[in-house]
Amino acid sequence: MTKISFVIPCYRSEKTITSVVDEIKATVSSSQEYDYEIILVNDSSPDNVYSVIKDLAESDTKIKAIDLSKNFGQHSAILTGYRYVTGDIIICLDDDGQTPASEMFLLINKLYEGYDVVFAKYADKKHSLGRNLGSKVNDLMTRALLDKPKDLSIMSYFCCRRFIVEEMIRYNNPYPYVSGLLLRSTNKITNVNITHRERENGSSGYTLSKLLSLWINGFTSFSVKPLRIATFCGVFFALIGFLFGTYTIINKLFINPAAPIGYSSVMAVLSFLGGMILMMMGLIGEYIGRIYISINNSPQAVIRQTINIGETNNDKQ
Image 1 (cartoon, one colour):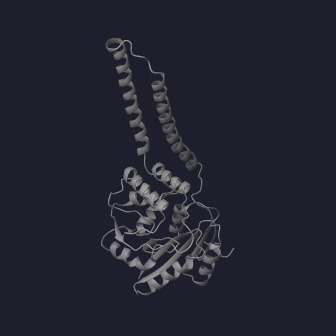
Image 2 (cartoon, one colour):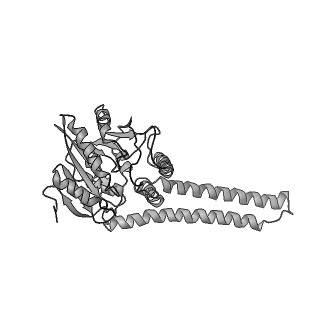
Image 3 (cartoon, helix red, strand yellow):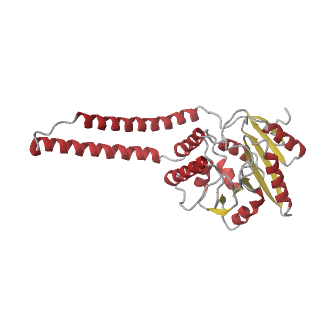
């Protein structure tokens, strides 16, 4: 019997996570071909969600609860859950009910067509305007820096094969980026159309600062293209400066000796180039800082407590 492992990072979802779990159980129970487990990871949510998932785990051994000691972010929470999966197929979905577990077999059936990863694709996304804008920026970033195919949509609702997860959890450094790990593990990735629901309760946990942090994680952890862009920008502006300087000298000596030397234009050029230099230095500093944190063995996540994890757990501490 094929086993499905569901991994759900939980944050501000005490009012929705129970219905998500119930929908998973009802959907899997409709088929006799699958067993399942549900791994719920509390990313140090400020609400009462851990008490809810603790009760769920204590009432059903197929449900596993993990409590992180602080907020490490959604992607760290996902990888933490991945380290405890035992299924053949792994499905990741949201805790707010917007990603319908009832349509999971659309993803799984597509996986059987020979793909390693299948992402949901939404014809009509029900996110807020700001979240949709952030998703578009993230899409452009992954295309430009991580070589994501143009026609591939990357969403938080996806399924993959076990060997993909085993490759992903080899990444032990801080600042994980799930999309980057998936894209570097296989090129057999596709989409399937899934319904996207309206949010029933609360709001997205992704603020602008968290989205910016996620993008920085993506291009500093899994691509050196920003550094190459910095190099090309330096060469380009150096060439522009050389040509402009040559033109100024020729114009002053041979064409128009009376031409004034413009203080304002010089200051504008210096300010622009100075800003570019500082930006590129900041980019290099970001890489160096992350290298420094990584070699200091900064944890990807720290687990305070687990329930139903087996011999490795700290049940009901």
